[in-house]
Image (tube, rainbow, N blue to C red; front, side):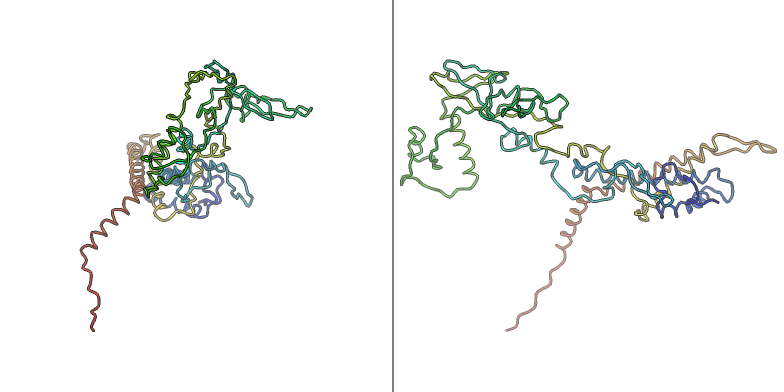
Length: 431
C-alpha cells in the first residue's frame, strides 16, 4: 500500500501535505477508517485518496470553527489591521514554493485588547462638538458691505495665500498651487481620479466671528456686585469684594460654560442665519467700512479618504478579509485531533454511501446482494451534524464573554464559601 508521502497530490488542496504530523496521521487514518467501516469483514469501496481527502476536509472544518470562535471574541481588536499575505512559503521536494492560502498571519494568536475602533467612532462626535475629531478646519472671510445683509458662501467666502485672495469653494481642496515659472503661483486643479481631491460640496459652518472679544477679568462669584458691573459696564479690576470659594471642579466647568454662553449670546449684538448657500447677518451693517466676517468651516468627511492619512481604511473591514489562515495541524492538541478523526470517519461513511448508492443491488448466484448506500449516507450526515453541534456548543462556552461570566460566578461562589469558614483566633498575649 502506497504511503501518504510517496503519493502524488494525496489531498485535493494540499494545505497539510507537508506537515509532518499530518503525514504520520494520514497513514494511520487509513487503518482507522477502514476498520471502523468493517473492512476486515467486507471490503470498503474507498481509495486512499478519498480517505485522505476526508481527513483534509475534517481538519479544514475544525480550523473554520476555531477561527469563527476567535472572531466572535476579538473582531473589534482586529478591525483595521493589515489584511496579511495571501500566500505562504512551503517546501516541496526540497524546493521552496509559494502556496495560495488566502489572508493569513494572525490565526491562533491572542490579540491585545484595544479601544481603537470605539475611539474611531467617537471622533465624529468630537468633530461636531468642536473639540477635536479627524476633519481639518479652515478659516475664511466674507467682506461685509454697508447696508447689505445677505451673502453667498459659495461665491464670496475667501481665504488668503501669499497675500492673494482665492475663493474657498472653487479651489480649496480641489487642487494645489504650483510655481508658474515667473516667481508667482498658479492654481492647478486635481483630476477627478486623484485621491487628494475633495468633493465639491457645501462646507459645514462651525463658527462665525465678527471681531475678537476684548479680554476681561472673569469673576466666578455670580452674586458679587462687581460681576454685575462687569457685565453691564465693562467694569474691570480686582477689588476687596472679590471672593474665592473652594468648590467642586464640576462647578468651575459649568460656570465656565455659563460665561462662554453669556459672551456668545447675551453680550453679543450680532447674529446670523444660514439658508442653503446664503448667510444673513443681523443687524444690517451700517458702518462705512464694516470690515470682514470670519467663518470657521470644514468640508464633510470623505469616509474612505479622510483629511488624516489612514492606512487602516485598507485594513480589515469584515470577516472576509481577517488574516486568518488555516490552523497548522502540527499545533493541534489531542482534543482537536480526536474530533478530526471522528469527523473524517463521518465524511468517509457518507462517501462510502454515495459509492454504494450507485448500485442498489448486485446480482449474485441465487439472488441479489442488497447494498446499504442510503443508510450509510444518512448515518454519515447525522454524525457530521452531531459533531458540528458538539464543537459549536463547546466553543460557545469559550468565548471571552462566557469566560468572564464564569470567572464572576466562581468569585461569587468563593466569596460565599469563605463566609462559612470560621476565622481562627490570633495568638494569646500573656503579660
